[in-house]
Image (cartoon, rainbow, N blue to C red; front, side, top):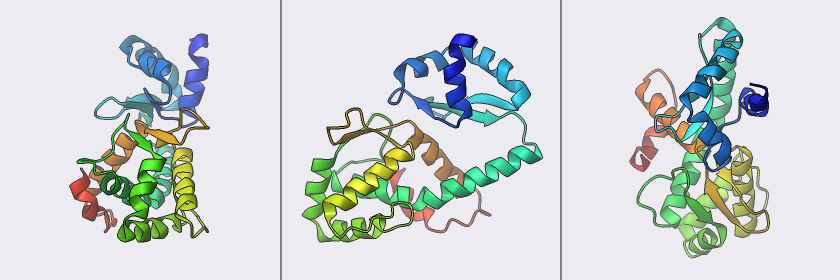
Amino acid sequence: MIEHGPLLERLLEGEFICAVTDEHSFHKLQNEALVEEFNHFLRPLNRRVAKSDDASVYFLAYCDLSQNARHHLSQQFSTTVQSLLPMLEWMQLVQEALGRDGALSAGDTIKLQDFESKVVDNQSLMQRLAHLAADKVFKSTSDKVDMQIKQVFKRIKELGYLHQPHKDRLFYIVTGKIEHLIELVRFIKDEENLPIDDVPEQEAMF
């Protein structure tokens, strides 16, 4: 178990492990026997290894929803919801600009140059980008399209939804964490008592 210590620490710190961010660790977590060992170790901490419905990303979940667990989950949920609508708008913006048929999924590649060239040729996309970039999640103060795009993508990378394999090359790969976000959207849509009014407008994406 000691050799897997660094991976356990990353999971406990809230990281999402997928084939894009860490292929080696991702394959480790596909080993059911190892996951059982992890869960045995994590049980006293009220944690277990969980995965998305499509098994494209692994993360930690609670075993039992104790009062402390509920409090922590409530904080996490509030933080995620704050970035939820801007993230959905970004996904839709990318989808429309690059002419994609469906929502972004893990492993998709986005080239900033291609995205920027499509946006600058479309006034409507430019206006939507400017509005999105000024959102409190992205906090761009620039009126230049290229700077707005770089700030938005930088922030989404920091949130864990994008991976940049080479710092000197402006292309990104969508991580498995995006699947977790989509599952959250579907959960919110199924729960009538969750007041996220704008989410249904993005339903066509999924």
